[in-house]
Image (tube, rainbow, N blue to C red; front, side, top):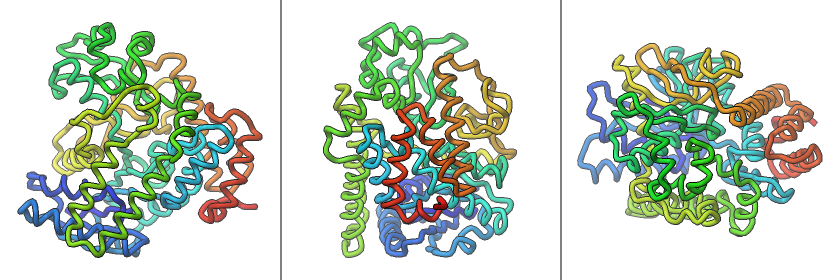
Length: 448
């Protein structure tokens, strides 16, 4: 099979390659194309992959590097889309522009998600059109954030042949399963919402919901990162376990204060860290070792501001291996390629799954996957407060998509102002003014 990775110069691409090296299926990927607009980053990543293969002592897929989009996707069986429009400089601007006006600037949640989406949607649509023209039978697996919004935009071109993935739900399931001392493969996890805005409501083992027992035991709840992050009392009050990104919602003022107090945003940390890696990797004889040390530091510091503010402490050892997106993507590819059904939480069109949203709204829910693609599975309605947030954010996502399509500054302002985590029209206008001044990628999208 031929797999094309768009954003192939991205720092996490070696994780995908690691999963491919370990793949034992007969339908394994034998051709891997890495596409990026930055050839130097492509070369650095290629050096990491070559050394990783040598260390593993296994023959991996044939790797080629490409800077032309049409050539990269032509004839692909699967396309991973993992691009970052504007690079980490854009992410830093998303964070700082929002924080300077007192609101959250996290890259997928709140103002940061809207501004990131505005400059990303046009590129995502360009990718979708290129796939439709040059690889019409390919399946697109979208990693690009904000994942739900971008997947919905691409679905307007590709329909159900684009599927969005995120590793947050599967990480949550594993942590809860460990606390319950159950085999994750023998449990059903009832999870629903949007990307980075979802809740685990039930954990069924032999037909019985074992989640209430966990939530009633503060000592066991403290064994999971979400328990330490949100607090056992709050999870017991909710009667569910939220996705970790909901800390930015339930503790919004705390999160803004924590990021401000940190002195360095996540984007600034990653920009400093990754620029050091890519500068050194080209001249290093141990590109893989340098990458692995950098990756480990990245994982250890993930959501560090929230964990420090909440007292959640260090991440668990099991969560530091970096496996997430790559493993979900590999399972998804195999289910489609071999027609061996599996169940995965994916970002897909709602159909009739979540009440309160129309059939085309992209949601994040468990899906049955086989050679026909992914079908969302029936799920109970969301709690009223959750449904309120989900419907509001879905409206914001769709307004952002339309603003990006049309180049409308007015619609961009509407999307930002109506986000529940942005407090006024004036704030939205000020954030966009800062963004337009600093980011050429956004100026190319929004008409004056």
